[in-house]
Image (cartoon, rainbow, N blue to C red; front, side, top):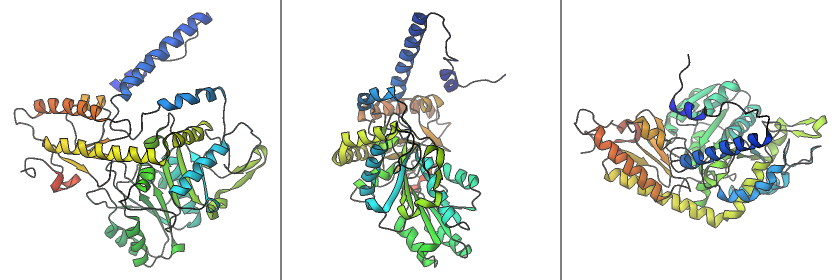
Length: 427
């Protein structure tokens, strides 16, 4: 017999569609279930701290009338198809906006709206493999779990690069591995905001390392995985800058994360000169197939377009500044309470000591790795929510360590001695 944990139990309340013969009874049943689920989502969203998604989606209700239609953006966004119910003009509008953000001319880029950051990396790294079929994929150990998975899917030789305490790629380790494999091209995944620590790999240092190791521009391909920070980084005056003015091959972000969208989605952008590498004319859909998926969500580009218009650059910049200030507020309160914590410069990801109680992890939906947990301060996270979490955490923490038999974990190796508040390093 298979047992279920509490999360699985929550999702098992509705097992299968009801088959009531009476239409009125069926509608009453549907209204009841949807209303209950709405309340469940409302509660869960009010305690949403550990996962990188913006829960501020109220504005998108204005687009509900479009749910009457199946909208399918099959194939190349820049090509018509036999299917006329699509939203490709919105998709191109969104792509043009990001092209300006990432400094590439309209006639020099190609891209599309994806199902999320992972599909963007799937496309970007496939381009790298097709351009450099003998290439080795390099990525730091702090990269998203999808990167080694992609290497397995594409049967690519893969080298894991060590990370610094911050989570940033260790370019000394990259250099040593490039030298060992200097007879083979390099395909490098550069993180613009790592999954757990929010660290930004130093693109300029990566490029300098490639040059120092004797790699010319035709011997390497760089994909930038910018899932969260793809919008944040360009709007900051400080930090490592990534741009198509530099010799990168592609950039991918998740659209549902910082910007916010009711559905997972993303942007993949590359250079127009690479477009035909994966292009294939398909007669029966009367268009070009050059994306990872066949049928693509036609609602997602409209939601992204709407969100960008609602916010604008100034509104997004205000969100960035507010999130950074709230992240610093959380870091400072944790530090004042004697809790090990780390926040990278200009980051919104606060890493701290993992709570001992699974109940608090589940309640606040924290992501945990080893002895660490993190909170990602997205636009929906206000200080009131952070204060509620801190009150909850600090009250429970008193009970965990009350008798002195259990001590907080040492996080020196994870986040550095200066950020560790254990009994040894906190003194």
